[in-house]
Length: 149
Image (cartoon, rainbow, N blue to C red; front, side):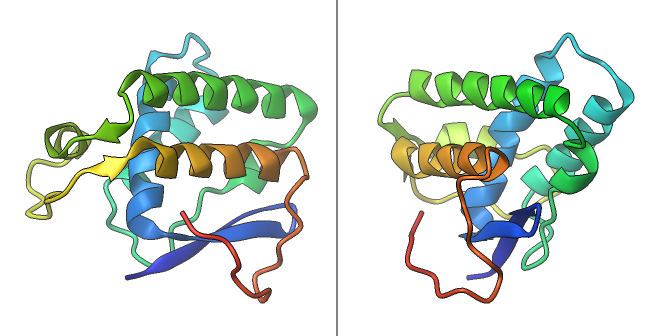
């Protein structure tokens, strides 16, 4: 199982790439529907789409430092996170295999989900992303991992 370090302003958290890909796929859905079509939002949307496919095992990079360069952008990101949280909550306690497989953007991929997942696992990632951008997470890349998604 591969993991990536999601970072912002020198802090971050390690996460299993599969869980991160699911989360990014849901964030992508929100970005796709966003009325804000500024260049940075379009770039973030495309990056999250590609990372949401789960192809970048062990080196998924969200480039948050490049996208969230000021408080205004951070506020926009919080709104995206809030909408993503609401979307996931609307799916119920368990996200079934069909829903997960419908998140795949590339029909050429042979990799499919074989099991369902608890929505709480994805919601925890959403919470961590929000806490990271707010500066509430102080985990460094070399710190021990004492959390689980």
